[in-house]
Length: 566
Image 1: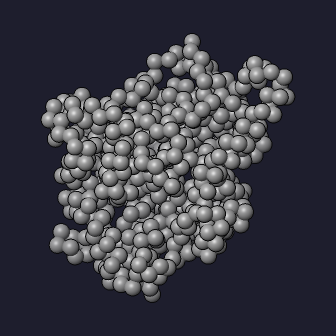
Image 2 (image 1 turned 135 degrees about the vertical axis):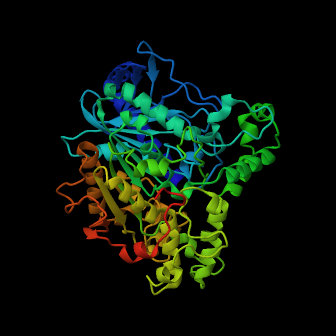
Image 3 (image 1 turned 45 degrees about the horizontal axis):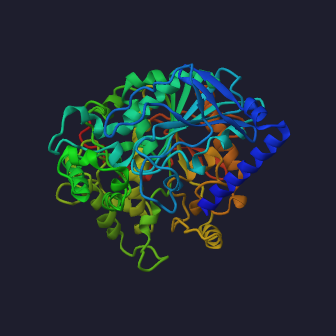
C-alpha cells in the first residue's frame, strides 16, 4: 500500500504538471516559471508542488568514494543544476515497508531536498531532518519524511525552509576496516562516515541555504530514532554548532546504540566472511551489484535492526556523554522525548498470536540480556545496561516490576526504558543544566483493532502494541503531518485520526524552530524541564503538562550510562 501511495502521488504530480504546462502555452514557458535559487554552489532549478517550491536530489558533496570522508561539491555559482528529481538513497536490501529501499539506490547518495513556499521570502527558519533506520536503512525518499506537507500546512503568512538529507548507512556508513590486509590510514574514517556525511550536509546548508530564503542563524535539526542519535552525537561536538542553534530529538537518545571495539570488529569480520574478502583490494574491487546480490541481505539479517556505533575518539569523542554533561551543548536549545510503547511488539508471543508472552523473563532473556551481550555488555562505555557481567540484574528488578500489575508489561516498560525512554530523560537532565530543554512523552495511538482492520482491507501488515500504545515513529507522523502518506501500518486509517493532534504537534515544532520556544495558542503551557519539577508534556488527543509522570519507573530504573564520570 505504501508503494501504491507513492505511485498515486507520482500520478497526481504528473497530472498537475500536465495542467501547468497546458496553462502556460508551451514547455519552455513552464520551465521559465519554475522556481530557481541562485546559490554559491550553483543555480538550482526546482518545481512547484501544490503551492510549495521543491528542490530535489541536490548534491551536498562530491561523488562519494567508498569508505572515505565526503568532499566539497565542485560546482560553482556559474552552474545551472536540475533539482526536480529525487537522488538515490544509500544501498540497502529491498524491504516491503521501507519505501526508501524501493527506489534508486547507490553508495553515491550524498544528496538533500529542500521545500519552501517562496525562495524570494528571506530570513526564514530552517528545519533540517535526519532520517532514522537504525543506521542500517531508510532514506529521504519516503512519504513519511516529505517536507512539502509541513510547509504547506503552515499558516498563510508563515513560511520556513524544510531540508531532508541522505547519508551513508549500514556497511557503507560504518565499518571497522583495520583488520583487513592492505588497510591504510586513508580509510580510517570508515568507522563513522555517516556522521561526517551529515556534517558535510550541514556545511553545504550553511553556505547555500540563504538562496532558498533560509536564515543560517536560525537552523533547527530534527532527527528520529538513529537520526535523533546522530543529533545527540553532534551535541557533543561544539565545532559543529556553527551550523545549528536548536534540536528536536525524537526517540533518539544514543545509549542503546553503543558497542565495544571488540564487538565492532567481530561485526566487521562477519561482513568480510559474508562477502568472501580478506584484503582491502578484494573489498574495493566488489561492484555495487556484487555487494547487493543477496549478501547484503544476509549481513542485515545477522546485524538485526541496528548498526551499533563505536566512539573512535576522533569523529565521536570517547567521552561524548560526559562532554554533554559538562556543557558541550550549552549553546543549543532542545526538545527531546519518546513514545510510551516504543518496542511493544517484543511482548507478543509470536507462536500464539495475538497473545503476549506468559513469562516476563522471556523478555529479559530474549531481548534485554541478548541486546546487552550483542553490544559488548559491561565492556561498552555509556551503554544503558540493566545486566551485570554475571547475567543478574544491575537494578532493583523487583521494584521495577511492581510499577505495573502485569509483569510482562512492566518488563516491556523496562526494555523500552533501556532503549529510549529513560535515555531521553537522562539527556534532558544533562541538557537542562545549560540551556532551555523541553521533554515530552507521546502516549497517543489509535485503537489497535482499527489499525488491524484498516491494514487487512488495504493489504498491509499491521504493527500494533498489545497494550494499545504508540510504537516507534508515531510522533513523527503527526509532527510532519504525513499520516496520509506515511507509516499506516502503525497508524491505520488517516481519515479516522484526530486532526487536532497534528495541529498541536506541527505548531509546537514550527514555533520552536522559529523562536526556540514551542509554546503557542494551540497547546497548554509547556514549561521547561529541570530536575526539580521534571515537567513533561504528555501528548495524547489532549496534551497535558505533568510533573514527573514516570516517577515510579524512573526511580526504579537505577542504571546510569556505564562508565560516566561521577
